[in-house]
Every structure is written in C-alpha cells, then in structure tokens.
Picture 1 (cartoon, helix red, strand yellow):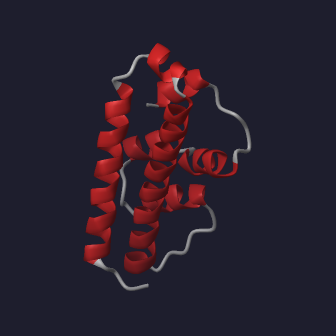
Picture 2: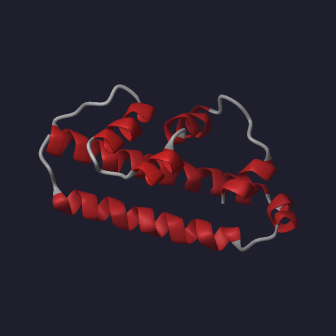
Length: 120
C-alpha cells in the first residue's frame, strides 16, 4: 500500500469533526438523551465513525509504512503499539476498540443508554 499523506489528513479532519459533534452531544443531560430516539442513533453512529476512523488511520499507517497487515481490528491496535505509532497510555485506552466497533456495527449485544452516555 502506498502512503498517502493527503488521505490521512482527510481522515484526521473527519475524526476531529466527529469528535466535535460527539462533544456537543455530551453536553446534553441524560434526561434529554433519553427523550429522543434519533439521538440514540446519532450517538451510536458517531461512536462507530470515531472507532472506524481511528482503526482506519492506524491500518493505513501500518500497511504503508511498515508493510504490516493486521488480522483483526484488535490486532490493528496491538500492531500500532508494537510499531511505536501509539504509546503505552494510548494503547491501554484503545484496547477493546475493535470489539466495541464490532458491537456497534453488528449489534452483537445491546448496550444500555447509561453505557452510551458514559462513553460520550
């Protein structure tokens, strides 16, 4: 895979946009969050887009700079750490992101509204 700086910059800009949008939603009270079904979907979608963006950015760097192809989303996080793309602290924070992305994408289980508001 060829490293494309422009592609990474676009992905990082989208990630920043998603983060801003999620932070805006985080200002809502739990009561307001519970009142509106579309808000639940918005939160789930933003969390999915953030997870997908982070994983995609790391995967692009791993493949283009290190010729590393990861076997799973969790493997992307481990490989990003082992190649020095992220430090130990960020690695610890991101562990489980691949599984969380899969929960959101495939609705393997239903997360409680309390859990979503905690994640925000």
